[in-house]
Image (cartoon, rainbow, N blue to C red):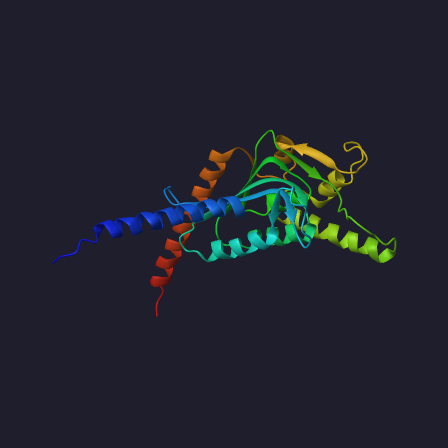
Length: 252
């Protein structure tokens, strides 16, 4: 007697599909990440939204991006041969300086083609995060706040504290200027401006000004960012093919 297992197999296949879909939805909800398989190129979308959470847990009502989630995701993206590019969507008020710089340094050191896009806002430590990709975009209505390093809680009024602030600020200036076209003198000028923010020093610039200052590469939205990423992926593939041909033609 022949037993028909088609019903069971179909049931298991449907269950597996449901599990995959459920896992994808969990990733979007928990980490703000999604990879789109049915596209011209397989790219990964990474959201950096709300406040960047570092060494201290923020209140549960805060919308946060946790660096302990982002860092392993970046390592996985860099290793995954199926993922051809990474698009980073930024709408952040800033947050932990060292956590933000750690994420920015990792993205800047990736071989995977990367594009960032600022929507809404890329404030405070969101500035290094916006410029860390190989190409950066900003929508016209977005804004970026550039200000000196701030610290919450107890601060000792001693020279060592001022030295620490100075060094931290210099790290940010150096990283931003190394990864964009803005000059250090101009970035410090925007950072220390006293005419824009009430009860604070710093500057707020919109999308057009960010591009004019050389902080962001291009003005544009999602389609422009993805087209740019596709071009980078295709150019990278052509370069790899040319290098392989060159290696094969070398005399032994």
